[in-house]
Every structure is written in structure tokens, then in C-alpha cells.
Amino acid sequence: MDFGRLRGVWRRIFALAWPVMAEQTTRTLMRTVDILVTAALSPAAVVAIGLADLFARFPLRVGLGLGGGAIALSSQDTGSGADANRDEAIAQSLLLGAAIGVPFVAVGLLAGPALVGLFPASDEAVRLGGAYLAIVFASAPARLLALVGARALQGIGDTATPMYVNVLANVVNVGLSVGLGFGLLWLPALGVRGVAAATATANVLSAGLLLIGLYRPSSPLSFTVPADVTIAGQLVRIGLPRMAEGITSELAEFPFNALLLSLGGVAGGVAGTGGAAAGDVINAGFQVGRRVYQQVTGPLSRGYKIATNILVGQAVGRSDPATASYEGWAAAALSVLTVGGIGALLVVGADPVVGLLGFGSSPAALEYAAAFAVAYGLSAPGLALFSTLSGGLQGAGETRLPFYARTTGMFGFFVGFSYLTVGRFGLDGVYAGIVLAHLWMGLTMAVAFRYADWSGTAAGLLRERGSVAPKND
Image (cartoon, rainbow, N blue to C red; front, top):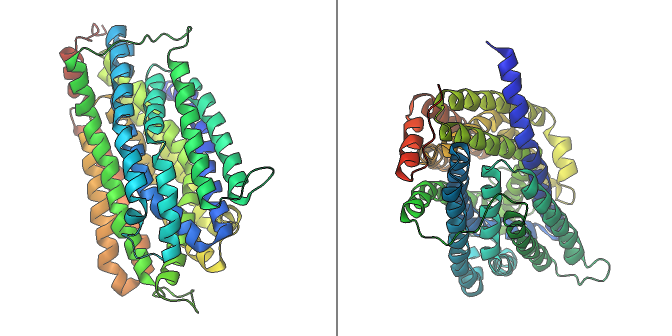
């Protein structure tokens, strides 16, 4: 093995990934602060934003899908030198994002409480969750613009500008969540509604600043009036499976959360409570435990995924699939070593970490949170492998295979295995379902990256839109 080459690739990966990691650290911190603020209010408040966020993540998934098309085409066209095609792809994805975000505004205003009420949660959780969803959905067009704009810049190799913008927006979000949640300084105490208002404000701020970053005078990008239907078609073809992957993952969360809410006192540890209240405590433990895992590993995973997307996309744009493959595997190895290592530490030290990051939660919720954190810690190698290699495939324009891997993992194990085993094994069956789902996703992605003709997919896309670069000698 050429360790010198491997170290060189790892340095390039980290150079691209660290701004994404810094950005994601503040993003996950923002979500963690939301959990902490609401945990200090009541278990129902934690469940409220947890359930409402299942719906609030739909704009995120749509934005990531469109952003997936934007980053794939912008990285490939950067590699091939097709600047005009790159600029048009970015402009089209931005306009699509803003337009698709508008219906979410109406859904939040008209159906927020009804959507959250689909779950067997307490009346208080439903009421608070509906209010949260209406406020967050009001900023959906801005959220989609921000997601697409960040991916467009990352595709050309600029991971710093999205970092600066999103770190600022996330810091504003954290400050407003605490201030509006508790009524600190001159701000009113709005509770869950204040947390939602903080998120909406940050979404609008990041969208505006990223548009400035995209088209500032020193930017290599130029706004182009969309006219090429081939590019539009490719954005949709690449983006739809990516959207479907994310939406399918969110849909799997619905029966999973319903299962937790329906368990009541099955797992013990909630003596003196029953029905919806006991289910609220278990679900609150799940929300906190998963948030702890995402806080300590999410930034690295997202950074490696974006870096792999860029490297593979630019390599196939240069007609160099061998380099694309090598760099994809090198990134996967780095991700499994680091993210998997952190996951192992979380397994060993779940109780103190959950106690620190879950401050304010009830003792019963913290007990469940530690168990869920252990399950996610055991899942870390599979999640790392899936995230990194799916990023590589996305850079080549192949988004169908990650969709298949995630869908089968989420419905086959996360939901299916959990439902089949919970009656006999209680929450232990649910924990096993979480681990098996993510190991399956990671192994499936490794097989796909090794054997699928993703480089042929990329070459076909490049030829179709006239962005082919000369092959390397």
C-alpha cells in the first residue's frame, strides 16, 4: 500500500471537510440546545419538537435532494471546466428550491396540529408541536435556498463560505433559542414557540447570506437565466432519488416513533406514569440519545460525505474514474476509523455523556437516552461507511443505490425488525433494530461502490450535457 498517497488524500479530504465539520458542529449544537431548552420545560415539550421535527425535516430532505443535484453537476463541471453548464445548474436548482418551499408554508399554517396529532402523544405535546411546525414551515423557502446554495458552493470546492455563513446563523439560532425559550434579557418567554422562531430566523439569515456569497463580485459563479432542459432534467434525475431516500427515511420515523409512544411502561423505569405520559418519557429518551450521538459524530460524518462527493465528482469530471475510486475508499477508511472510534467511546461512556448533553431531562428519560446512545454508538461504523460512500456515488450522479440501501435498512430493520421483536424482547429488540439497520446500509453501500458502474453513469451525464473533459493520458 502506498501510504504516502493515502496520507495525501486524507489531507485533501480533511482540508475540504473541516469547514463542513465546523459548520455541522454548530448546527448539531443548535439542535442539541433546542433539546436542552425544551427538556427544561417538560417531557411533552421535548416530544413536541421531536415529533414536529419529523415533518419539519421534509423541506430539509427536499433541499438535500436538489442540493445533491447541484453539488454533483457543479463538481463534475468544475472538473471538466464546463463553467457555463455549472452556472446554469446552480441557478436552476436555486429557483426550484425556492418554488418548492412555498407549499410547505401553507401546510404548516393549515395543518400543523393535525399532523402532529397523528401520533399517540399527549394533548400538550400535540398542541406545542403544531405551533412549532407552523412557525418553522414558514421559513421553508429560505431553508431550501440555503441548502442548495451551500451545496453549490461546496461543489466548486468552496467549503469555507458556507461554513462562515452557517456558523453565524447557527450561533444566532442558539442565542435566540435560549433567549426566547426562557425569556432572557429583553426577549419574551415563548417556550417551544420561541425555539421555533429562532430556527426560522436563522433559516432566513443563512439563505440571504449564501445568495450574497454565491454571486459576490469575487465569486467564480455567474447567475444564468435557466434555458437548458437537459441540465434541468439531470437535476431532477439526480435529485429525485436523493429526495426519495431522505423522505423514505423520515417516513420510517413515523411508525418507529409511534411504536415508542405506544410502549408505555413495557420497558420499566417509568413507575407512576402510564399511557401517553410513559410513552412520552421513552420517546424523549430516544430524542435525547440520538441527539447525543449526532452531536459527537454528525459533524465528522457530514464533512467526510461532502469531501468525498467533491473529490469523486471532480475526478469523474476529469474522466479519471480510477482516482475517483481510490479517493472514495480512502475517505471511507478514514471515516470508519474516526467516526467508528468515537462511537466506541460513546458505548463505553454513554451515561456521563448523556448526563452532560441531556441536562434538564428527567432521570427516566436519561436512562432510556443512554441505552439509545449505546445503540447508535454500535451503529457508528455502518453509518460512517454508508454516509461516506453514498457521498461518493452522489458525486458521480448515482443516487438510486443509496436510496435502495437506506430504504431497505430503515423499513427492513429500523422499523420491521423492531416491531417484530419488541413484543418478546421489549426495547432490546428496538436497540437491535437500530444497529442492524445501519450495518446493513453500510455494507450495502460498500458492495455498490465496489461493483456498480457509477463511473459509467457519470460519463453518460457529462456527455449528455456537453461537459466532457479529455481523458487523462
